[in-house]
Amino acid sequence: MKELLDAARAGRVHDVPGLLKPMATAERRAALAELKELRREVRGWGWDRWQARSAAQRALLVAGAGCHTGAAAAAAWIGARELRDWRPLPSTDLLDVLAGREPAWLGDVAHRLAARAATAAEDYPFIADLVRLAKCPVPTTDAFVHGWAESLVSARPSHASRATLSLALRSDPHVRELAPRLFETVEPAPALSWYSDPKAPDHWPSALAGLAGDGVIDRSVLVDGCVARLVRGGRPAELRFFLVLLERIALTAAEERDRAADWIAMAADGPSSPAGHAQEVLARLAESGALSAGQLAEMSAAVLFRPEKKLVRAQLVLIGKVLRRDPGAATELLPVVAEAFGHEDTAIQERALKLVGRHVRAGRGGPGVDDALRSELAGSAGQLSPVHRALAAEVFGEETAAGDGAPYEETLPPVPVPARLAPAPDTVEETVELVVALIKSRSASVAEFERALDGLVRHAHRDRQALAAALRPALADRWWLGEASVGDLVDLPSAERFEGIEVVAAAVLDRVSVRSLRDGLVRGGPTAACVHLALDSVVNVRVWEVAHRIRTRQLPFLLATPTWENGALDASDLVERLSAYGRLCADPVESDFAQALLRVRRSGGPRLPSTLTLPPCRMASAGMHAP
Image (tube, rainbow, N blue to C red):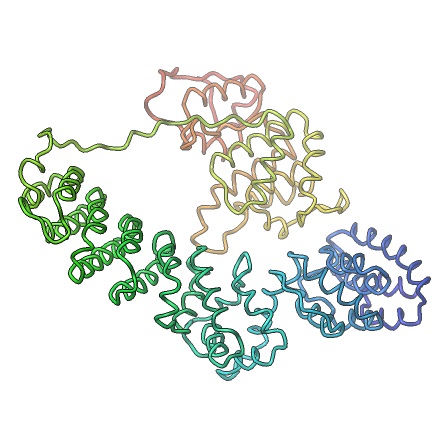
């Protein structure tokens, strides 16, 4: 047992299988308790020992997997994030220590690992080996399917022939089970969009279409999967694969006709590209007579008010073609066209009016247009812009088009009402909740950022220990905290990895050194890797200076916190805050004071005193002079 623990502590992962094989079950159980204790010890190693920690955790991963007797516990140990680094799992060593287990046990572990959404994709090669050894049904979880798709693409050498992906799919023993799941996962597999030309024969759309053509995969599964995915919607980049695959499959007229309801839904509510494709399909069905007038009217009611003018124009053209072929459809189609009289684009209004005008003229009606329909259409003409009144009079008659004769008035949207920024959170708990959400989210509003920053400063000034006690467990998963010792501080250049308000939270928790903060200020905060991010330095300098003051001379509150949600600061609020600074003999942060001056509204506020008297104790450091 001692040799196993020594090998794990030293990170000798390849020695672990040989040390485990002669150990009996009882010895492994006893070793497991020691391995858990070693795991806790390694977790507390500082960042100065990160390489040794990474190696030891990798060896612990293999040793613990070999010592666990239960499938659930073994899967939990293998899937633990803290035992991993940026490298793939040591699959060879893991399979070596697990090779003697029962097939049912191996299959249970494989399915439990596949159910772990956070790690199943990257663990696909190891899970696939377990499935092969256990001869069990293949898992079909979303993450496992993503890993399967990625493995087929990433395993291809750069000089591979164009048939490589198709050959890999044809030789894969689980392609019939996993390929249909590509269309059912909550998020599409990222590997499906890894191509420069989606129509190239060496990429996913062409490869899957070829498999359907050869009968390896049921064609209807691919068609139904693509249509369902496009109807569901999503980001355009994700839907591109399904749209191209549909085009590569080349649906027959019968397949298109059977899915008319899906095309209508896609044209009405889908993203631009799928909606355009659906409109083309429906146009073919309409021109062939396979789309009824009622279905075309249902589709048109939604398409005519889509924001894409190209789709709206194409829909009016399609309705015109159908009406020329079947004038009797006017009863169902013209009322829908008349709804476009209220379209925001006057050019669309004109097209719709001309289309109606070809079938309705003042004093007479065309086929299918009776007096009731003509009156209904004339009533809709009141929505037309004044520029089209002359044409409306020609179509419907002077009396109908004139309306009430009131002059036209443009209705503008109401002027936005400024909203005051909510004050900083009153309690430590609210502050921690807002700060954690801000740190862990990829985007946040200016209002959320300012409230979180001001809340940190205020509560750090009132009771920094209480704030730190609430922040520590909430941010335990951050790279700079974890369970490292209090004395293990982050220094440059590691401190430059902090993003935004995170450096202030680290300062509250004493996790970043004063020297690093001071050196960062001298360098102007973290340097931007891209010239387009240069403006971020405005925010970075301010938060780094605030973090430095939290570790040195704490502030009671910030000066530059906006009064309004649009970022403006009332001059009266700034004067009040400066007066409070004066009473407390607190000197402002330079960047915060400068930001406050830039945010001050220059007009619209109450009359302010021409001078501001502060106690002399802090005026020099604040850059002010007594009047």
